[in-house]
Image 1: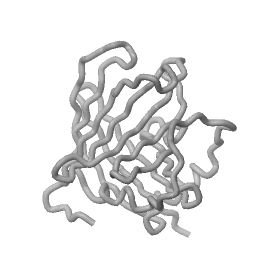
Image 2: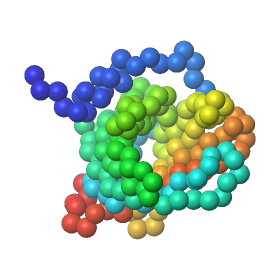
Image 3: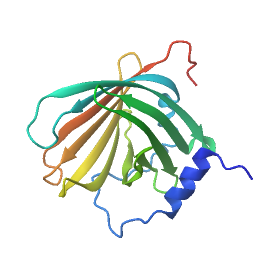
Image 4: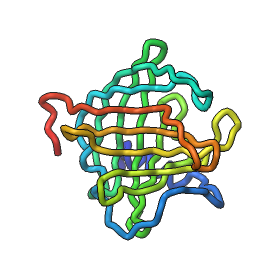
Length: 191
């Protein structure tokens, strides 16, 4: 039996240990959001801005570029983003696995690289009625406990935008340290 990449990744995630208790700032929802990431399906040019030093009051950003292809599986309840990041000092082959839980109406977002594999924990959350998605997970950065927030939105012209922020004070303040702006590749059909 041939196993697709998406099915293989889902099997790995299903076998990964889940923390006994997770702290999350995501609110509950009853809204059916299994199609909320459909705007991201297709092929994209990506522009990344990365903060040079995180949680250090740094204001120096560096620009990186790449491409990304997003496909769906499980009738829209799962998505796989396969992309790359090309910076002046490094190249990263990365991916994001997004899984929708119909019982909780929440998405779990798993990020990984070819070098590191999947990097737990997943960010968990949902989109609101205005089309802004927020996803949270407790984590550590350089040994410090933090909360990581992913935020998804659509900018004018239907350009998807991703932002990653860290909070070292349990969500009182946030430092955005990574942004990605997506531009559809010319000739690539939107779904």
